[in-house]
Length: 399
Ligand SMILES: Cc1ncc(COP(=O)(O)O)c(C=O)c1O
Image (cartoon, rainbow, N blue to C red; front, top):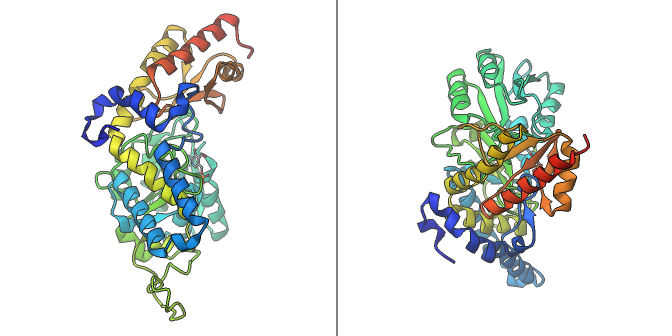
């Protein structure tokens, strides 16, 4: 395959055919616009998983060293994706575990307030609500009239010294609103508030570099935009914070010295100084190896290229919506726009069914049709969506 790393961002369009043929061959028969639900595993990842699992049938073919090298490479790839250092990355089996690392290990105390935007995905709500037993309040800031996080109101609330954490999704699951993390991060820095980000709907489709936009904790699963297996994911924890963060659960490899398997009962006093202290026990190694392979592809393509390409894909759909007065639920302008486009035609549930009948796979979320194209989707596929919408409107979809 072409060396994607050598191709400038704007040229991803020229590579899409090749990407579909080599990495996503099933796209010849299906219009899959549902990466916000589950991202497909590229061919290179399937092959890597098959080779690994073949060796796994006879474990002597898989020395510890080889498995741990893969785990290390997975952390390194995750770090590169967001501009972090590998020792700021702990591998996690999903987003929820990473959010729980933040909720349980940040130095919070009774009377503190955790600020959430209302209508967040529950993975970024329940771990914070669960702190109420400890006298920590999870306060939900009402959304704007458009249903988006109200960043101005959040900024106002951040001035309250009792607000110790802002926990927000990089991208909202039900409308594709991409938070202005640069603005929120600056306000959090100024107020000494921890910024915790649920990254799963954004990382892999929208660029984020934690060197430019400081974040304290960022949690993501691999199963959506990272095109990775279930059971993969990671949490980023800003280096300076790690020593102050005591994990609620500790694993046998969270401590100094356990990398020497010949001396495991020489118990250590000290947790590892890096983010590995948050990893609990034996890894979901095949899943994290799969994530390493998929991140390899995304890093070759470049997330900026994915972002530019996928946002441009939606232009004809947005133009069609304007022409037909169909409500677009997602933001259209930078910095809030991203690959996810949610639309609410009359009778959205029925239109969603019609899309499914026509072989277009997408989701219905909170009353809107959610279309979430990735690097392998095409403008023709978006055209298929508008064709179905057109005939649904003509036929008068049932509300
Ligand atoms: C914003 C957001 N967070 C988290 C999740 C999933 O959490 P987990 O990876 O723990 O299953 C989803 C979707 O499934 C989501 O949209």
